[in-house]
Image 1 (tube, rainbow, N blue to C red):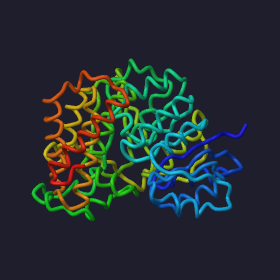
Image 2: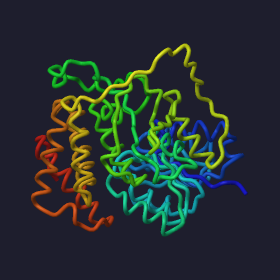
Image 3: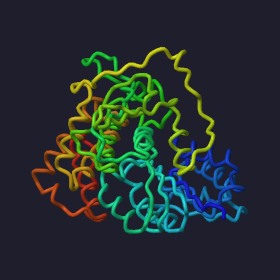
Image 4: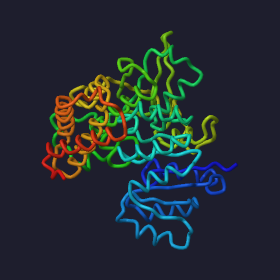
Length: 393
């Protein structure tokens, strides 16, 4: 029987790689595509929908619906727009769903897909950061499977195959260090958006590339590691690894370390999730370790990367703290991109919002429901906008 798939966030970097792999595997001859979704790039979204012969294409922006409909005219493919349409598309049963919408907006469609017992290939790290217990419980209740697509968590998942989690002593996730890993600290405050948007190793979207430079991306991944693998926070470590070839290491109680190595190409983690529980050939570079010569590692500088400390505080608080952390981070990133905040100001804003909301309410004791998460996210963004001088609606 042909596998039914959906790709949420199809026009982003992860979605593009997913599209590439599905087309290489046979496209509409190998898969029945239920839904593809994107943001404002309706030309690319329509092109993908036609190539995969999708049932429906959804743009997150209602203002783009007319254009999307025009581009799909005569194809028989439905067009829809807006957050509710994204959830409706996720409510259409599929066997395998790529969750690659960036930010908190990816959580409701992911939950909807899990309620149908789908295999959710999770590239939307914010879902676990903001709602880890809710996401994992939804999967358990409906017999669904969540597969990690972040390169680090895919690496940990693969290293743990056949292993007893009780024997795991520590998990080490690596970070390239981003665009500013070797800059003098006093220069960081003057970093421009263009400079922060250039990654030394990976080809990614602008927002995640800037998050890599600030290490907010890695901070989210630390929380994600705790939620996905149920690893105690003190057992999760971060190492700066400039070559970006070792994606993660798992340390066991006998002192052994198991490392996962691969070229910095997201098609490895995506392809592993697409073909799991088997493996299939993938169009990624094979490492020549003799040519590479050496691999280097160093501890992250706390002064350069305060986001890592904030992630530890979030894990200690739990509850709705992850939603507050992520919402404030996304708003602070918006402010940096808009030129209202210096690069080093993002962590300061997030810390201020966490402190204010922790003082106002018991973040750690609140029920983790979708309504509560949405409220916490909304309040965190509003407070962050206040801190950056943006208009608060």
